[in-house]
Each structure stands twice: as structure tokens, then as C-alpha cells.
Image 1 (spheres, rainbow, N blue to C red):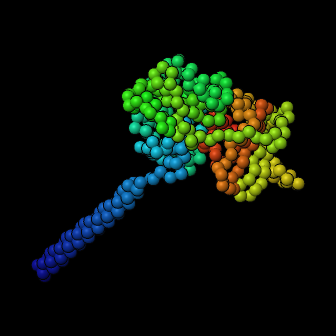
Image 2 (image 1 turned 135 degrees about the vertical axis):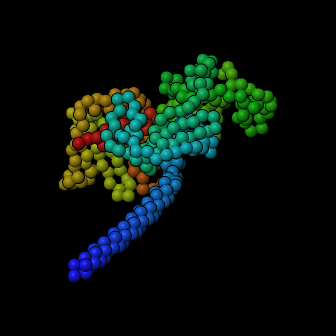
Image 3 (image 1 turned 180 degrees about the vertical axis):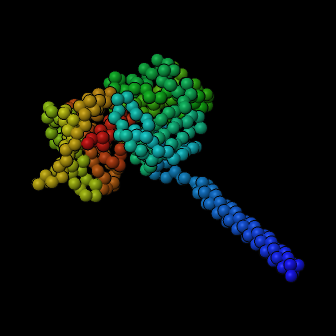
Length: 380
């Protein structure tokens, strides 16, 4: 009896032990299968995600055509050359840290806001220029120019400088004190006519050392070709065709002068809505905007800037020679419609322009307009 019981117990123990071993094996196998499946799923997910990121990264961020055109037009006007002579060789998207596109001028007021835009490098094959712009190209600034040393006005011989300024002064009927040399580049002309032959003019085919000189005036730029000494000076008419020439504002169309406590005034009119708004800056920093013809004065707004900002703006107007544009109007192109006309008045005079021609204004006037817009934008 004892022997049978012992055999029974041994048999049951063996069965239990075998069952435990089999259970363990199945458990381990199942775990390995789950781990394998999970690892495979994770690898597949990672691979798919990485592929999506790579696809996004290789999408080119194309430079908008309006931005490219605005930059090329601005540089062509500044350099007195055709846009066909320029090429954009590099560009990248940027987020500028302020309203000045990270290129503030001395004492300029910059709004502290992130501005999405572009960094653009332009070349004419000899030198490069770097521009900062906003997203649509309506705001742009020349950051730097990688210019050879002989392009600097300081290298220009005094005899050439004096000859060019005298010729430009006679042509523009402006005193030399209101003109400046903004670029001077040494050249070797291919003929005695300095590559600017008149109709039926005979030019000897000989190399002539000389200069290409750009003169800046209140209302335009002029490009001249000279020989080495300045005894021969010729105007490059084709290079000047793209400049924007102003017209005198008739006395009957001038706005009333400013009161003593008003520093600056802007009147904007036209556009799709056809409404007229007036914004005035007072000495105490108040900016008052009203709609002309609003009988209930329902659109009046009053904001403020600091007195220090007002003083900085006044100094900026003086440095940009705003008074030199007195009573001048820069008209819109023939046939243009739905544009906004801006009439700016300081204590020293009035100037008029429109949103179509803004990028073709003289550099100093563009700077004054930007300073005003930034001051208005910073008001609270």
C-alpha cells in the first residue's frame, strides 16, 4: 500500500513539474513574439515618420516673384543700371526680430515684433549686395554691399568729381550743394565716345580709361561716363530712364500749413474705398487720426508716443533732408488706378507720393517715410 502511494505521489509530482515547464516555455515564446511584433511596429512607425520629415525638408522654399522684383528694381534704381544686369544668386527665409528688419538706422525707432521675410543676395557678376525684406517685399533694406575699393567715391579724382557735379548741376538746375556722388567705379571704355555715341557720331576704336559716376539729387539719380581726368563727361540716358521724376505741386493744391504745436501730418486718400484720413503728430506725442468728411467723428482715434520718440523723429527728418522735397509730387504711372496718395507735411514743406511709386522714391525720402510709418506703428 505504501509502495503504491509513493508511486502515485511521484507520478503526480512529475506531471505537475512537466506542466510547469511547458507553461514556462509557452510564456517565454509568447513574450518573445510580442517583443518582436512591438519592435517591428516601432521600426515601421519610425521609418514612415522619418520619410515624411525628409519629404518636407526637400521642398524648396521658393522666393516669391513680387519680392524678387521689388529687390531688383530697388537695387537697379540705386545703382543706375538695368534689372537685366542683376541676378539673385542666393536667398533664404528669415524671421527678423524687429520692424527695421534688424537693420536700424541711427536713432531709428523699430517696432519690437517678429517679421517673417527673406535674406536675398544679388549680384551683377562683379559685386554682391545683401537685402533684408518682409514676406511680400513691400518693406526692404539694403544690408551690405561687397564692393571693390575702386567703387568708393573717395577714390574718385577731384577733377572728375568737380566736372561731373558741374555738368549735373547745369542739367538739373540745382546748386552743387544739393548734389552728391553716391557711386564711382573705374572703367575702361571701348571707344573715344565712352560707349555713349550720339547719332552719326564717329568714335575711334581705342580703349579709354575713365569712370562711371552716379550722382544723387533730390529727385533722381544721374549716371555719367567720364575719361580719366574729367575733361570728357557724357550722360548715360538709358541708365536714367527708370528714375522717377517729380512734378511741382500747384499752390492751389497744397494743404494748409501746420499749427505750431503740430510736428508732422499725413493725409491719405484714394484706394478702393476712396476715403481720406488725416493723421497728425503733436509735440506732446499724441497721434490723432480722423476721417475727413466724418460728420459724427466716429472714426477718431488718439494714441501716443513718447516725447523722446518725437524728438528722434524730428532729428531724422533733418538728417534725411526732408525739406529738400518741398512741394514736390511723385506721380503714379499713367493709367494706374485704385492707388493711395499720401501727402506728408512738416513745418518746412510738403511732399506727395503714392503706394505704387513708393519703392522708386529717392532714398532719403523712402527713409523718412519708413521712419514715419514705424513711429505710427509704435504708438499706443
